[in-house]
Length: 308
Image (cartoon, rainbow, N blue to C red; front, top):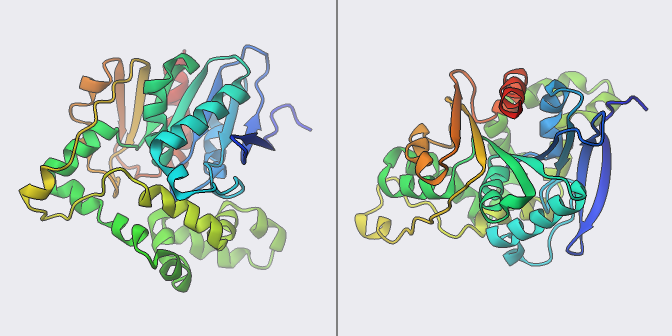
């Protein structure tokens, strides 16, 4: 097996299996990066970034609980953020084996990484966020920004009672559109090579989405959100009921931001330094929400510069 091979593993955390990818570093004291993916992806979303990161880095990327090859959780309440933070904190403690890690999160992985870094900072040396809203500034934006409320309207389709059925009946058109339809259209060209198709990232995504239990687990992250996004034109009486959490992160933090994000309005970064005083934000003008895959070389360089 090559020295820099990415291997897969399964570990039990709080009596549920978590699948993860690992590329070991060159020495025992290599920097350890732990990568949390977002919706509707899985650990393999990080493969391009892992390839671009220096080979001396030790990298671990789990499937979030219930996603892909990680076991669905027993109860819907297990997908509430505090429970996810507890579970993933235990995962970090277990796989890091006493070493401090650099935590990296995108989208829902970032939604878990922000509070995990805030409440268990002793596990980490630094935090890296890629296009994931901080809970405080995101909630504030929902209260004050019609643009953010409009961008969050997609959530309604994901929390609907018939969300699983609609997604399956439309061959996951909504999820494909989120990630970029071209990514799935090109899969038709691979159909003659079954092995390559089976191992491609898009094939892994489709297989996991087609598993109804897995799909329901993925949607549970949205269904268990503490506060739902109001309508774009919600009245002030409804907006005033939103409670802005106070979540302070003391770790040195790098935020990498694709400016063509369709899920988050860039204004959610305003005021972020109030909650994250040791902060650096770097923008990519042509990247979208999926900056970790679209601009893996750029993201790897920014992360490497941040860690050195």
